[in-house]
Length: 271
Image (cartoon, rainbow, N blue to C red):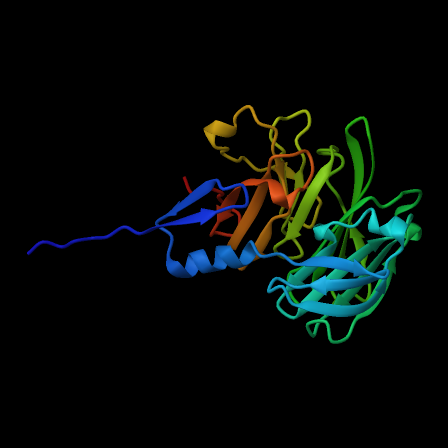
C-alpha cells in the first residue's frame, strides 16, 4: 500500500505584489507571520492623535501633536502588542512616551529628556514592548555625512521610568531604520542602505554591551538593489523583518520579508 504525502506551501502577497513562498510552513505558523505583518497606524484630527490598531479600529487619545511634531511622526512612532499600546512624540531635545496597558482605555505618559542624552535632537524614534513591564525606545538624531547618533532606553515598570543602555555606535554608526527587543538582554537594530547596498542587521545578546552583525542571505534578484531593513517584530520565537525598496522605512515599498521561527538564530526569505 502506497502512502501519498502532500507538501503544502503558502504564498504571501506583499504590497508590491512580490511573492514570498513559505514552503513547509504550517497553517499556525502562517497565521503568526500574517499577524506580525499587521502594524498599527495613526491619524491626526485637529491636532489630536487617533491610534488606529492593527484591526483598523480607531482609539481616541488626549495626545496633542503640534504641526512641527507631525512632520516627524511615522508608523514607527506607534506600537501595539495585545492590550499594550505606545506612542512616542519627538519634542526637540526630548521624547514624550505615551503608553496604555488596557487597549487605549487609559493612558499614562513620561518623558525622556535632554538630561539623559545631552545636546541632541530626536529625529526618528522606534518603540516596543516585550511584555506589559518591559519595553524599549530607540532614538536617532540628525543625520550628517551618513552618520547618525542613536540612544537606547529600556523600562522595567511598564513605562513609568526609562534607563539608558549601551548602544551600537562604536560598532556601526550609520543611519538606523528600526529596532526590536526579544528580552532585556537580546535586541536588534536595523539600518538603511548606505555604504553597504543592503542595510545591515546588528544584534546584542548582553543588553547592549556588545553588538555584532547578523549574516543575512538576500535573494539574488535584489543583488544590485538598495534595500532597507525595517523594525523586526516578534511573537515568541517567531519573527519577521520587512525589507523595503527605499533608503527609509517605507512600509508601502516592502519587497519581501525575512522570517525566523527560532528566536532569530536563523533568518530566511522562505524561498
